[in-house]
Length: 399
Image 1 (cartoon, rainbow, N blue to C red):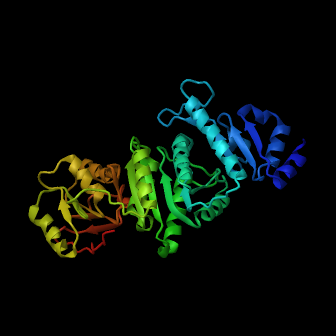
Image 2 (image 1 turned 90 degrees about the horizontal axis):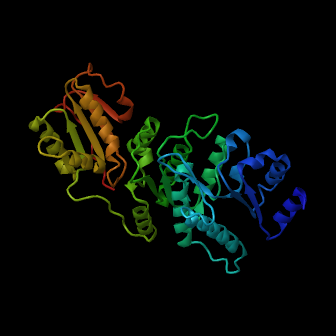
Image 3 (image 1 turned 45 degrees about the vertical axis):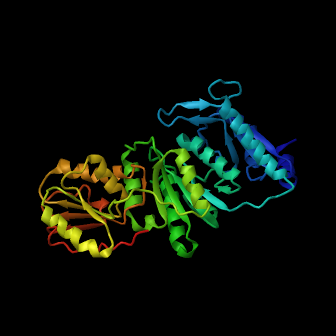
């Protein structure tokens, strides 16, 4: 059957077309041409045998319902192929076969059961594809429709339209964060992960009555050292627009499942410990009187305030940061290593279990000559004065 007839048949009947594609198939121009002609057919499934250099070849991979039979190991970048009777990856092979079977069975199902709702599970990079597939499988078993159900376009504007369409009507948004910040669009210096985060943030704030919950998920075994990715995650934690109805979690895959199951069942999800601060003052001196002045000034606002002076461990310091809504760094004398470490701690702290993004990150400098220019973009407010003279509006409501 030629491509034209096959395409017509695929579009007008309930039959499925399965295309098996590997890297060497791109040398067959007729095969590629016929495959592209079937890209928009709703019953076309693309079985991807091994990694493809689609960016260079211009193949419209994003138009297909895609099933990969390989994964990239996030720690090493090594590619692992899913093959039948392979002792190491046999289970992954049968998982993919099951996924394909379910997709076909749903098409032919006569019951046409209604889904409980739509969930936006953001696309991530190849190294997290296995985790995303795992989550998608779990949510599908819970009878939710998981979107996007195919790769997003490499064209920035087309991708934006796709994401906005997928977000409409969603009851939960989940963003897996990758280990490395990877540029996705040829004409934009932005990762796909950040672009989706920005769009979902705008979607949530566009209609607050929807009360849609958003989860930013960093796998618990990730130690993000990539500078661009650090800046991106810090921005999520710092920007007020990104914090609405948003929970930043650094937990295992199974812990994430427990949390979103509670959210979807309507339970309140409370994460953290008792006696942790809403406002945390990080000072480079132990002037107890000055630090306590801020503590006492906020005591009537219902905000719990703690400082880093005297008797707290480094782990306690990170927990205070992780659970605070407002962080104030009080920098009184030139000490670049101390200042650099404390700014980096602010980011690192969000890797301790889980937390909500910061509402404010404030820098208080004793004088304007203290060199903080390299990090000032990370603060929401900068004040040049002593902490004793400082007057701040820190009345941030607890969520």
